[in-house]
Length: 250
Image 1 (cartoon, rainbow, N blue to C red):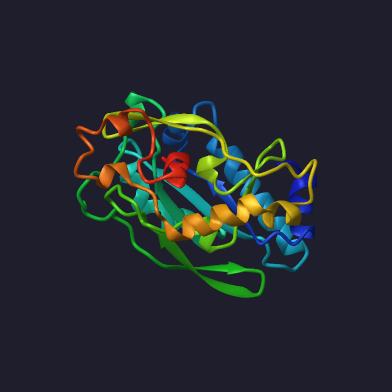
Image 2 (tube, rainbow, N blue to C red):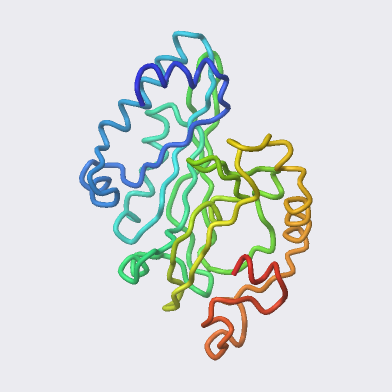
């Protein structure tokens, strides 16, 4: 986050900048994000706030994204104080998507509902001439299908570093993850590339329009909610059982 980039974010009229902050002290943050420095991150946020103040604007608004783990769970109650100090008016707490069996042991969620994460909700923060009320968004404590997609519902998409257009973060790259002892494989899913096509043309293409319609119907399975999850060989093969959309998104 150079000074030039900081100024550009303000001058471009960006709506929101979210910062990953998975620990409220330097030791915890460096433990979660290996090699990262908490002071560098907070200095970047402070520089962005100065650039906003110099131009008399409250944009972009600031948010913190905190991945909740067993190793940092005790620091969650301190997030509102950190947010207020940094001029942040939105904190999003999410669960970890484990890419290794070892990381799976850090997960706080289960199959059944668990007690909510301990955090006080609400704080006031000043941004330019505005007094904003801060909010915290907490995740559910059980894993299962919500039967909705916030990206599709919010008419959002993801543009990758190489220009590839994906429908959401989860499908923006290929990776394994572990859920309740089972390894799953996710493959990157794109509908075009902004280096070769106009973004509007990609958004209105037949394949992408069809995809969004199918996701709104949500006619695909959630293996972790299924009564046959412990004996199903289709799930073991990382395949779907309700048709093409299920196969694509399992």
